Image (cartoon, rainbow, N blue to C red; front, side, top):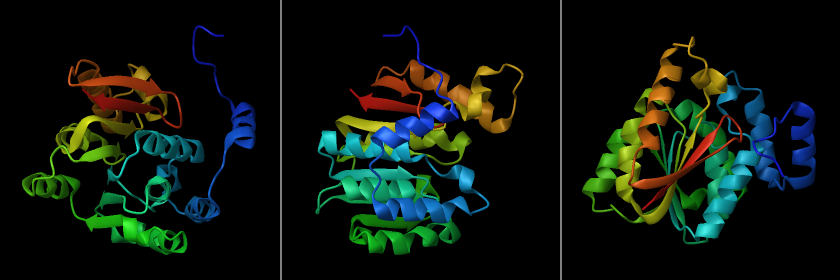
Length: 220
């Protein structure tokens, strides 16, 4: 037992992946493809993808949302965890990034589960709300521009059913949120978001020290 989270260095992380990672071969192929991309740092870690898959399966989720798709690894992870009639609305503003992932979605046989919408996410989410979809989604993943997090969170919360879960990525910003001297725009935005969600009594929360920090918010 331990009174605090253990520090996971590269050696321990390698061991953790060795004994626990069960990554679909197409997911690994997409992760390898993305590793050569100049923005590869935007890719979620495989252990985080696996955690999200377990959450989706544990919840029996059928309808999911993703805000920020990049090359599609996290979308692929979620889609593989969904039942045959499940769907994921994937929001992004870049055809250049998302087109990398589409062939991998097709190869994994989940392209039909992913409804990719290229537009500002607030517009997509507002349209879903206007279409009467509030309260009909089970799970949402937010991993996009940090100043936009409060707006994305509010809309996803509206779209989620009671008991639904929002997973919010990059909570730690590489540790910058805990450094009072770090006043970078994204760090400040995330620091403010973290403070905002801590006192939001519409959700219960838990922050998991995986990847760059992942906060899980369950709608009450």
